[in-house]
Image (cartoon, rainbow, N blue to C red; front, top):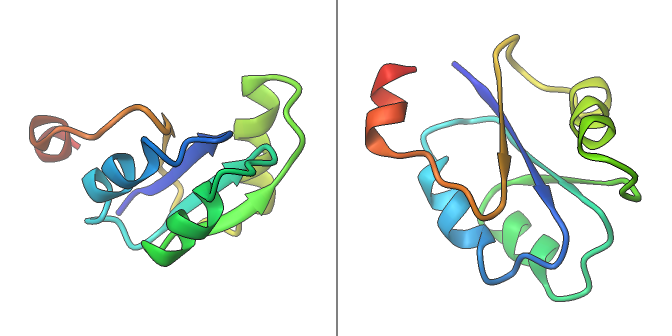
Length: 93
């Protein structure tokens, strides 16, 4: 399997679509930068785990997720909240 790390900041309009495309994974982590629009609540309701980290750059956010997210798998797919996993990509992975 594959762990999925999604970076968010006020992405309530995108997070459901992103998470629905990742629902085949049993290890989805959202690293949030302080959303105030309900992103975290919706992501948690949809089954994602949530960690908070103040944003400084993308690499540090992703590395934080890997280091502190208690990920289940060695393979990690990184997404932004406005991205989705297509059926073709899922099949290829």
